[in-house]
Image (cartoon, rainbow, N blue to C red; front, side, top):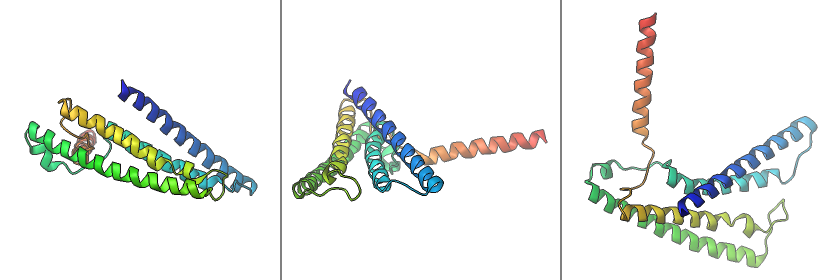
Length: 185
């Protein structure tokens, strides 16, 4: 249930950020090259929107298995050992995430206390940069869900992109297409 709510939230936010960035860049290009004018704040806003999208995407990437990892050794381990090693890896990732959250909290607190605004937009910088903390919290939630799934036996580790397997599949498809192309000639 919690995972479904997080999935919907992340997917909606990522889609909204991507659509906003695309629309903003499109309008900016039309204004600059079509009319010789533009928004002073367009580039800064696009940069911050992309940062938000990346950090939401990191969290979502844990769920969908789009991250690349070196798991050759882990894959040859027996299932119980694989779960233990994966659990240790998740705990290490959580430790790093907690350190990052602590640093983000200190940074955001100081920026908020000083009262710095963004360069081109009248928005407090701590609000624009709050994705550092929000993103790390989302990543920590994903890692805790993964750790729970490892602990309960629902999975034996991270879902990672397997580029070698995908490359071999593409090579086989190319070879099959070449072979079929040669036969029909």
